[in-house]
Amino acid sequence: MRYLLLVGVMLLFPTAPARGQVSVQFGLPSVRIGIHQPVFPRLVLVPGYPVYYAPGSNANYFFYDGMYWVFAGDNWYASDWYDGPWSMVEPQYVPVYVLRVPVRYYRSPPPYFRGWYRDAPPRWGVRWGHDWEREHRGWDRWRRQDAPRPAPLPVYQRQFSGGRYPQPQEQRRLHVEQYRHEPRDPTVRQRFWANPPERRDAPGPNPSGWPGARPQPRVEQPGATPAAQPTPAPGDRLVDVEALL
Image (cartoon, rainbow, N blue to C red):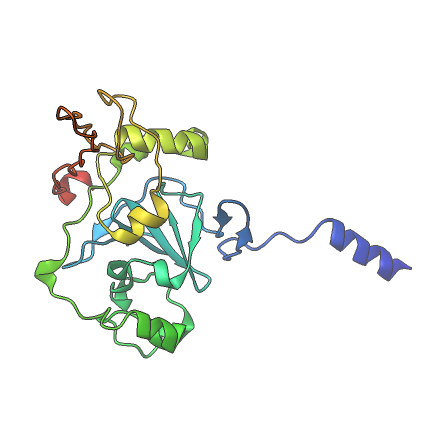
């Protein structure tokens, strides 16, 4: 009888995970990955790559093309705010420049990284199988001069920590209003930035739906059916890393 009572108590009040343990809790539309980043992290560019990493973190924590990327519990997660909420990203949708980051910049590498060359990317084809490797043939071969310029850091997020950290809906509004970077990576654009809200300070409707996109005048010719005009992307801007860190 005493044993049954103990089992019942354990079911009603499960033991909390130890601090630092990665525990994945599935939810909609985001997941909790057991990694808490209490303040805006110090981010440093990986030399020769358009990706930042967090040298002071005990997590595999990166920033690329306007989004944060974390590798935890053998899965990839992404968010546009430094402490989530996080969305799980399937292997085929992780940007290749994130996957190319050398092993040495993973602050908490999984055991199977052992023995892999520290100055080369993880051997994802070995981990994810032949189907992934066939679809991503040549992913680890690239010319440094063809790499995109690193996205600017969303340093406006520094002012939001602790009790000021915004809820997801407010996060989205703040990000659109205060971050002036439009994603260039096709995966980021298609999977994570579909139909973002319009900027409040835009001078008119935003036909592209992208943050910071400039609305274009509608040109009509007499007797012709009006056609939608293309929206050019805003010019890329370099980030002064030393000034931001």
